[in-house]
Image (cartoon, rainbow, N blue to C red):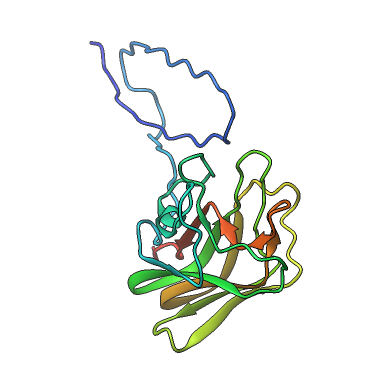
Length: 200
């Protein structure tokens, strides 16, 4: 008796990379031993949620909706989110996600801009990650000063903190990252928010 198995896998490849994947079907008389395991998906409470910002560069692949579209790389039509550009780095910019209900979270994952020749551009130097139930009372969850993600920054930067219940999560920068010769801005390809694993 021939048994068939239908499966799906999701692979994330860096922009501008090339990979050939060949899948060859094999007929089995019996199921392969061992547990069946699928890809591990991280919680992302920010996906498709409303985004607000101090300023927003609109067009040319930028927009608040691009921050939470689950595309973790800066591609031509969806670069991510960017604040306005400034002539000096000492400028306050912020971006926030409304989770639409109180949610227990303990992780923020920031994906740097990674389009060619702009890897890591606009990633903040001095910034805080904050949470709030109402927007008039913010709690500092993580404070970074002189942050250096590595050059060039292509990989996700993950920040964890004690689990707490919040509706709003924001990143507020007081010293912006350079964007080549164009000036300084706060820029991310994607922002994700995660929570602790469920209790056993």
